[in-house]
Image (cartoon, rainbow, N blue to C red; front, side):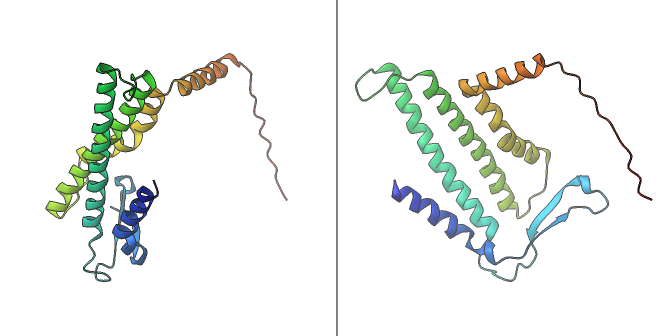
Amino acid sequence: MNLVYALIVLFAVGFSWNLWLQNVTIDYIDLAHPEFGLNIRERDLERIPWMNTFFNMSILCAVTTVTSLCWNVYTLVRIIKGHYFHTTTNAKPNRVMIQRFLFSFYSCISQIAVVIILTMANLSNDLHHTPITYLISDVFYLLYPWIFIYTQKDVQIAIGSTIKQLFKKKQQVSVVFTNYQQH
């Protein structure tokens, strides 16, 4: 297991060390329309010209996605073996095991979508914000809590009891505004 930790640190530091030396700024895409979003980019590209951050991050994402895909295929094979071949080494899959696999598999699929977007942006040397980019970003970041709630029974029970308690309480809340004027 220590080898896994060492590889994680090696990949993270190996592909991102140049970020510590870069001048990254956050600006509005259009100052007149701040609702168009933010532009996060390196401003001094000449500082480390041979170290292409975007390319290296694409490689890192691809490596982690392939690793995730391999582990998901391995898990799926173990679940199928456990379902059809009941031996001492292949445990019969239960609901929790399948739910955890689905959560992990969703994570892998969303990673693949991000790698495809990064690859397309890297090949075109441009990353425009298109509706598909926003959709993939939303799926990547916002669907995890819903998948987590769907796959975890104890979380469902806790959320259900909390919602029931909220609706059972019918207390009146009154707010008193006082105007303190100093002369």
